[in-house]
Image (tube, rainbow, N blue to C red; front, side, top):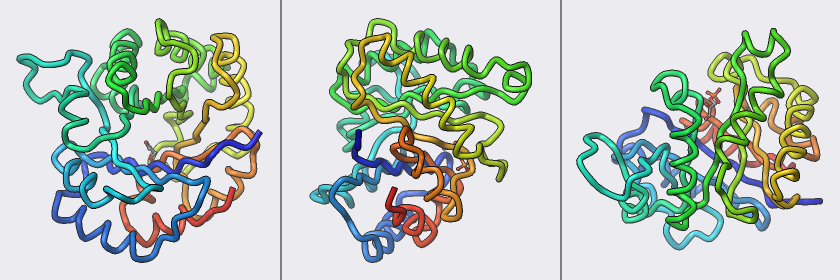
Length: 248
Ligand code: 13P
């Protein structure tokens, strides 16, 4: 089945508000919006409001948070609730990015709490899953991804508005992307888990990890790859527009 494409830019800890404004002026001048493709931007929290404001009124673009806290409010220094992210204009949130899991020690249980908070708050949730290199070498890829999915989606209603992003940790920022057929094998396994949990075939599955203008078309040629989640190649508006021009 053909699902709408999603091109997601994860700016990580780059691009201040003034830079975001200049970036989006350039991107919106050169990108050609098209039916059946959404481009999502995940700026750092301080740049979220500027990014969302610049995209407001553009049907095919949205802004989202890179992470949220599950509590609605309280004394949680440095954290952003779903309501705060929404108030800044977020329509979506990344949850369980491998950098949150492995650099900040986020557990499967915390990822699940965040998923439920994002969905309860009416935002689109992008749940990130993926194995480390040692896990792949031990043949544990499917087991790790299945565990992350089952834990992340525990208590989430089938039919909820979510997207799964498969990002093998060894492919992130390394210039070494999974081959389209490697990614397709894992995407097929993810689909089996989603179906077993009651999710329909309309749930989109993204690939992330060293995506570039040079490999995006081949990745999107796989029927189970419905878009990409991109770090490095999303930091320059011209380069990112080149990635987003892929037809899929
Ligand atoms: P790179 O595209 O830089 O490999 O980063 C991928 C990623 O982590 C996107 O969330």
